[in-house]
Image (cartoon, rainbow, N blue to C red; front, side, top):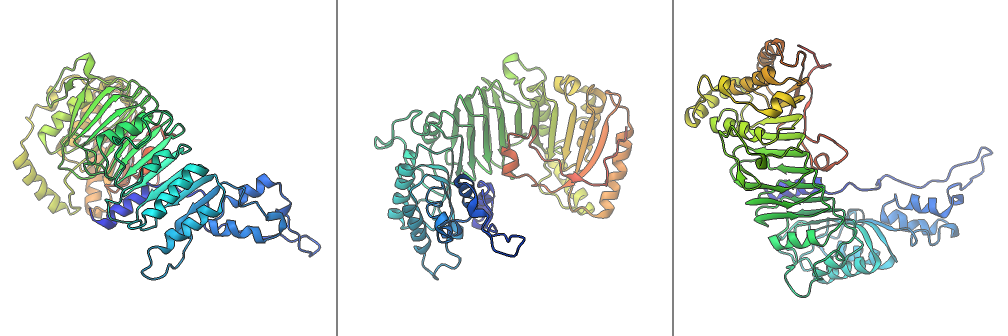
Length: 507
């Protein structure tokens, strides 16, 4: 992934701005033709609400509208985004924007409701950065987005970031995180970030002990995300009584260890490429209800002290996670070992009600002939399942008694994809809906051929008696960070878009 791709993904994960750059103030006109300034007649609290929705330049300028507006901006919690400060910075002058930020922060008494500094080049700006963090600590800041734009990666983030105790949301990007083992940092404990609820660490070099420090210092933390982290840290240990949502987004780590997370409801693992193994250890997480994407090739799943291996047909009670209701798996159905791992993983989650399976075909072409050639070559090197394999599959509790909905994403009509679908239809007693998401961009001829195969599948008898089939289409990477981290969504995984004008109930 190149620099531009990294920055594009990083900026897509940052919190959305609370105001519109198009917002403006205007006075209305009375019916008798005379000018009447109705806005200025509003109570102070409403005027502050109006000012808080303006860019910082426009908000500061309200002071010259009339004497009525004097003091409104300085008594309104500051909303600042550096991208609106300098429309055309002097050519080659990287200090102009940090200097403008410094002037705004110094001129406002605080507190700071929203500060997004993601467009400033911070290399050789150590003094300005230290001053900003001192002002944040002294005046108070609620939401802070601080990104070193765009490089180098080893610009040191001052330890004073750990003294901004008023923070409720914090996103840090492209830094060398402070060494929390030094005696100069605040002592580990709940007084460091007593109010912090959301924390995103983006493409930042940090160590395992720094993760442990942050979690121990954030007693109210609800959402924690490691974004675009490539082996820093190598191991991600999670111990938190408050954490509800954990995301490893475009992140590679050697090990994720959920040691103790009694409030954890959602665990999101998203890395769109394959080739690096991660051990996923689930210890104490009694409320975990949403999990995905587990990868049948790259993830070594360990529940408690048990490593789940391909071909396991019986799992012990201490190797199951009964709280999971929504499960998403990434699997290449062409590879026999991955199919066996898929079935083993399913046996570890007996209460799953919604099952998402994403077919990983190694980035297949949408050309039919190329698909067929690639599939044959792949099968020749990966081994095949026996002709009786699917008939001999043992019991899978979630499929037989719990699964209500199955989503097969990037469905390519492969033999094992169809066999798994038929297994669900034969055994899933409460399944009422199947969503087949076909790859976007396939040729009309291949689309027509695939749809021709779907209709006979849909018409076969269902164990549940009735099951609706829907055909959708969607790109391979249609997911986004904001949807994945939105706790108001009971199921955050993508389903593509409806291919036809309406979903067809076909059985």
